[in-house]
Amino acid sequence: MRINSSHITHIYFLGIGGIGMSALAFHFLKQGKSVLGYDKTKTELCKSLEDQGANIEYDYNLTLASSLNKENSIIVYTPAIKEDQPVFSYFINNRFAYIKRAKVLGQISSEKTCMAIAGTHGKTTITCMLGHILKDANEPVTIFAGGVSENYNSNYISNGNDIYVVEADEFDRSFLNLSPDYAVISNVDADHLDIYNSKKNLEKSFSDFANLVKNKNQLYHNSNIHFGGKTIGFSNTSNIYADHIRIENGCYTFNYTANGKTYYDVQLKMPGQHNLFNALCALSLALDYNPKKAEIYTKSLATFKGVKRRFNYIVDTEEYTIIDDYAHHPTEINAVFSAISEMHPNQKSMVIFQPHLYSRTKDFMSEFAVSLSKFDSVRLLDIYPAREKPIPNITSNKLLEMISVEDKKVIEKKEIYNEIKVQKGMICALLGAGDIGVESNLIKQKYLK
Image (cartoon, rainbow, N blue to C red; front, side):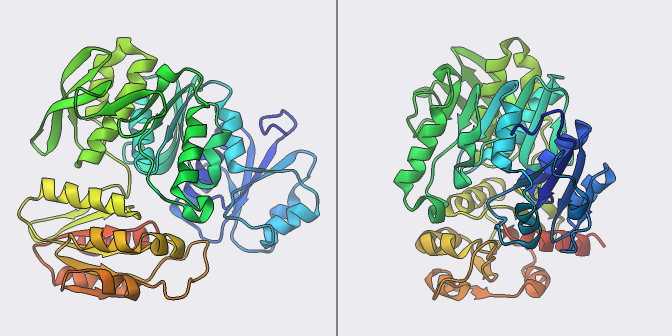
């Protein structure tokens, strides 16, 4: 069943407050559909959806669910929602049509030009960067992002429907539902091994995604991986590269070379070499789509403000510098540390890290220990379980034992504020993909009083 069928007037989202689900819900509200949903928590995204006309229930009373007619309704769910969940069970038992979120995104984006951003790390930032570049240049674009753009305070941005910029998620092989005309694969690191079992299987899935791109000249990827597209890097051995990189007035300035042409003194206000690479990816797709707007696109990049929870300075005073980041993989923690070292040389740093998933902590225990040991001071929260049950002997205390710095301990969330307060003068990074983001907001409010 196609969700855009004319007889479908009501769409119910299970887990509507999720970052991917909410973007779709915003989209169908804009299309004039009646949008309903369930979530266990009333998030800021839920509030925004309600402000735009969505109806959301936060309990299992089935008030909204039971009001639907299966003849004109469809249910959208994610792999995180199990069939025994009470609301989902109701729809299954009453024979409602239901469809995975990934398939919905695939159906929508197949209708026009699709630009898909994949990769173990960086895809949210690249999606938001590319979306901003195209939107700022007034291209007819709609963006479905896995994070909230600082420029628009939203994960859904719409300026027309000729181009769809979508975040291509490798979890559960969701990105194989897409039909990309243009694509980026930023990197392929081992992750989601609870789904893939091995890095080889993960790489096979990315290879399958690459093969979905009809024209390999419109496929871009890191120079360290080989999928037959154009390579991006920091030397002229890559098809597309940046050089003459310097930091001026707190932002990057660099030369960008693509297709034999160099664009001079391009600017990016986001710190970290990983974000510089992300910018090359975003520019590459934009220029491929419309090379005549190169000057406009590069100027638009300079006005990109970033993505919430991606190296955000939530406090920046003479006494305290606190950075909030979604980093939940050793490679991402390394990137945060590198950016801190680059932007704040000769300053000591503390990390407060909330491990995400027992399986990921188990798979990368040694790598986490090495990346966290680069900081001068380490504080760990308990593992955020998300969809998982505990694994024996996989705990934050076990990880702590493997960290080599002397100043380290496991703390509770209520202790975060005081731990930062006594470390005056240090750069503090709050890292993790769980609910540490909520704590970051509370910390910001306390320091802004």
